[in-house]
Image (cartoon, rainbow, N blue to C red):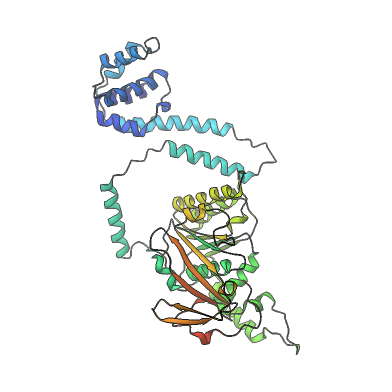
Length: 454
């Protein structure tokens, strides 16, 4: 046996508390020699039977297991002759480090960098996953008690009350969304809806709200729209310009004049320069694999300080590992993004499709993994009625005309608050999506001359 192993086993013999700690912190496989592996197990078994480990009790256990030909009495004596326990914590950490170093070297040898057909991001992601699994497996992190956590959580709450720690992020654009008590770092929100139901428009409105109007750093990873289209939607919402004008700025009326007048175009250009000239919002539109997306998110959060990431949408992401069913692939993506939000301490907003039964089409796991599940739909697709009645956030009953620009937002599930809240939003003629309440009366619902692009 090596001296490091002898010192650790000796400390376990001297103290039952150390033996209990070793049982939680160490594993038999961390020891290099056969004798150390077996003695580690024997010492734990003896303490479990309330028997004080010593030369006699350990040797009797060795005989009972028929290990006396492989473990010499001299090795047992070295262990029981250890007189101090003070170096146990350092020695156990060193034992784990030695095991980890050897394990990582073995894993590194197995990476096939010569395989030109294998995606480099997939190689990177698989290796990082292996490293994380290995590190988690041999983590030396202390197991927190309720007493320790209580002190930590109360201190954090006090700092938040004093304004020294940033509280949850609340929506100014959609006050009724704050029914969920805000988004906190580590949270994942899913926004689902059927095709052309307004998912992207609502999601981008949130990014404009959080990033442009509240100064949070954000990123949009769009797998459905181009960067230009995403930017045009942001311009429409930030400058209150018709989205149709931005998509077709050269369109003319029957008199040959620009529908988007020179004056209005200049006004939009100047306001966009004021509102959207920021380096705190990143926009990607490549069709990327899961591994590349995860790598980008990690870079954005750790290197650029991004706090909020929106992915539009999860159903278009190709997983690194193929599974027999697509819902299982999306389930793996969902769990991966939730874990990423927690590890990187950021907020993930995931867009997803719904099927005809208004359930998340890709995978039930999304609803399970998300802290909040928001569903968006268009009443015009659901009802033949001309008007819809609802109670707004001020408790006042409103009647709103159902047309192509009206959207219903339902809080389907919430891990941190009651679910079931509902409110209505309207895509205004000038491009901004707002919540309908007493501040936005029916006169704001101007007739739409053409279908509003979603």
